[in-house]
Image 1 (cartoon, one colour):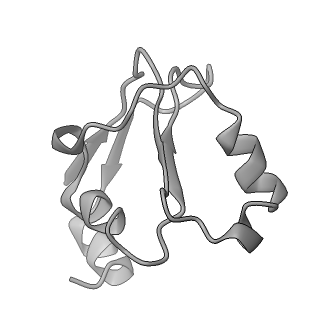
Image 2: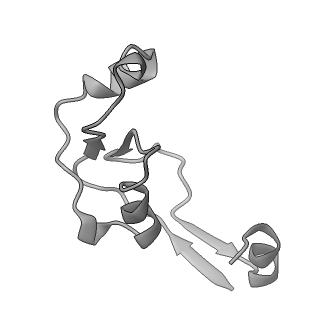
Length: 90
């Protein structure tokens, strides 16, 4: 079995692309995220390797990790490895 556990973060963390094309800065979703001011910066050592790599991609626009979790969020999930391998290509 693969065991996945979730935990609440005390604060939110976010980073926006420093090279956002001007035409994309008018996107309403981008504008809403750009208004968020109470989050701390992302810490690379806390990120999974694929997320650290995504920050260097030309298509990277930003990343936000929120604080807290909705009340009914599952805190533990068990996954059959066979099912996992059918969905994920490694």
